[in-house]
Length: 213
View (cartoon, rainbow, N blue to C red):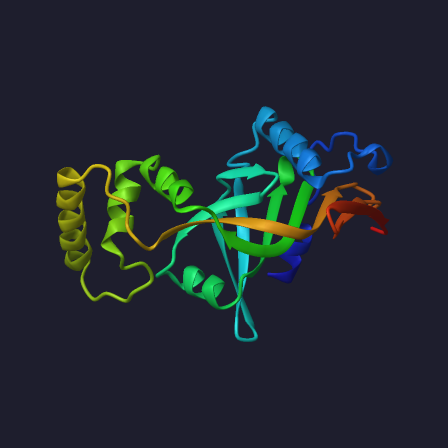
């Protein structure tokens, strides 16, 4: 296995030009530009991100979808009854990681997850597909089960609830905005002379530092 992994190609994406010296003062502006470039370049699911939380002294991670990015932060939505929701309630420190290998770019965001207003969560839930809403309404994420019939029965019940109340939003649905403390941008180089730029929050402003590869 080691030889196989060693032989696999890496950093084969088409890396665009990036001059950290000319980067904007606000990391949200640079992130937005990089995200739009990934979209325009046909990167698969460019809004998918690894969301890392902490429970006690152990980290856990999973892939979620970025719902928005603005001056308030990077937004995503979860059930507060899920494992990630419970971990965020206990410790709101969170890290987000975006990786777009086709364009040789990675972005890391670290900060505190703060709940958005309830209407934001409601709008997010109602914008989801019927299947996604039905599954969320079961309220059973991450629970063990013995028979697939349990899932089918719970889905049938949730589907009936949704048919009766199309605007139903579960009370445990929460939208979060990650207020970043640090944001690091990484641009790949085949010779490993990667370009890295780290933004750190400084009061109402940001300071930017170039980092060694």
